[in-house]
Image (cartoon, rainbow, N blue to C red; front, side, top):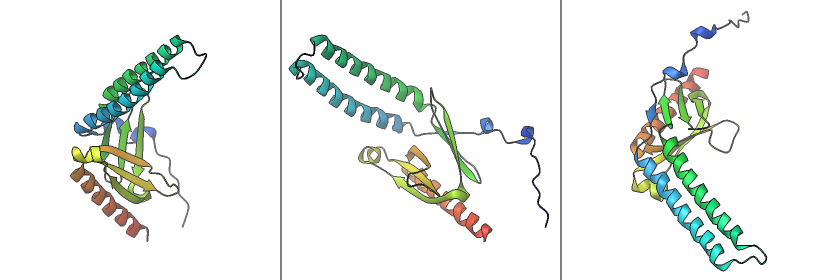
Length: 177
């Protein structure tokens, strides 16, 4: 048996830009905005409380106003990032891998080959359950955190994807033997 390692011309590589990406469920935008609204209300309450009671002696009143304005700016910025970023979250399922694209300012595209997947889970919090949404998590070798996490999937779609990927990982295991 001779060793072969043929060169692959760059022009013959498949183009990721030609993938037909599937967007996340529209209800997921509502979930993200609701979460941010809950966080924003708590943050604003804390900042207004700081402004009213001014607990730190010697700190001038304008510092509390600046802190409150900074908090408001942060909240507005997070709303913008969530709304603008939502349209840039999408995934594509291929025969041998799954691709997840995200990002509005900082773009990211993650591809996870099914042959490397060791564990698949579906997570659904109380807010997601209200919208019948779930998060699909793929774990590969060498880590305790998920290597790919796709939020905002309709629950049945997440289950179908999990079963499809599990089937593909079983096939790749049997091909290796």
